[in-house]
Image 1 (cartoon, each protein chain N blue to C red):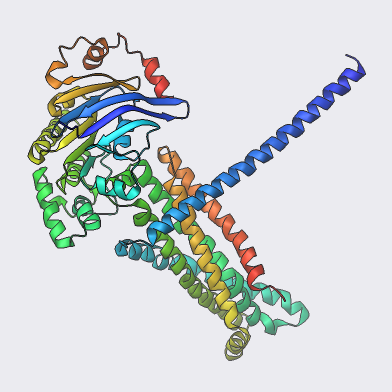
Image 2: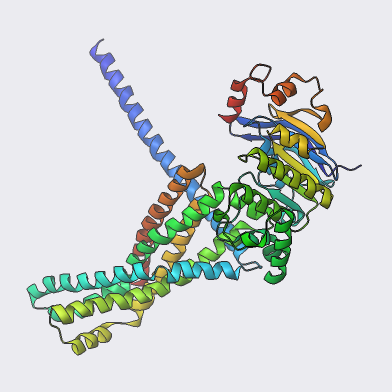
Length: 276
Length: 259
């Protein structure tokens, strides 16, 4: 084989590699667009069915109980320890600049704007998103969803719409509780471990906190609740192939909702706190 | 007589897998039709096409002379009001008690109050041989045979004029299978309903069917009165009903459908 032939062969190989790479990127992009389309269609169907009577009040209340009340311990504990760690770490950092007095401000701002909604969202995603995908996925593979249809009950109205509604309404309430417990955790560490004056700490907390800090967190929480319910329902509703399919649906629900929460958090933060 | 169901040239494929390849069948009012066939021959797909759970690719399905392949979701919901279905795995709702499962359509689709619905559910449970003690249990707390009876009670709770049974005796012991067969026959006779049963259990097919049709290679291969199936001269039917390993039906053919 001459040098010229070798060069030509290398050129063809390189061309093939680039083509394969581009084809893979294109395939991933097309898959992403197709998935987005399917989720959007699913959402529209659920919403269009959800707004029409009859409304399944019993199902809505059950989801409110599951998402709102039963998630309280896990969200509360997460917020408590986050607030406590936040106070400790802030003290370590700010004491280097003799700025320990801003700890109350840092705790309340971080909890209400970011950590409260994001951590509550991620914890609820793990607890509720996974449970939704597993329950609806099992209903799919055991023909319970087909049975619903044959019993003249629209599955999207009966299963999906109540979960979406409960997700959107319950997450803000959970975040409100998480904010309070997180701030309380910071207070406990600051007062009982770091020796802060309790009255002064509370005064600084309330003086510095603005209503917008709390409302922005609640708006984020409503979006996160919607994302968690949508991903849990979508992956469960479309699961296939027995126990393995349900397992996959559960994983996809948690992973996709967690990623979407982080992306949405950035977008909402830049939208809500955009500087003139 | 106008058929209750009329299927013409029905086709359904999943990618390269051609499951139904021109099914023609008529089911008359008050008749109990049984469709037999090996695993993977498309019996359940055919049933789901009739219910509207799967959309056929080609052909026509008429119920009472009305084309159902072009119906809207509202029309489908209305049509299904008069159809009761017993699913292969019972498909009871885990989150509800036994009586709530039976009364599901009464409460959620017909908006009957719960007290009244419970009374009817208890009557239906009694008609399938279950007493009040199981009514408040969850489906997970009762045996597979009892679950099948509850599913049957749910299917007949609103006294529908059409009943579909998907492998009603699958996974049950011979005694429970006979009980379910007798219950199905009883329910169909009592309601005067048109029934379609999908099964590969020949004992069940003979017990519940007025007519039997055999589905093979995506088409109806033979259709005739239940008492003539043993004397018919179709070699495929003969091989199937005798469960013989040798004959025109090859396992590879079935596997191609499954693959």
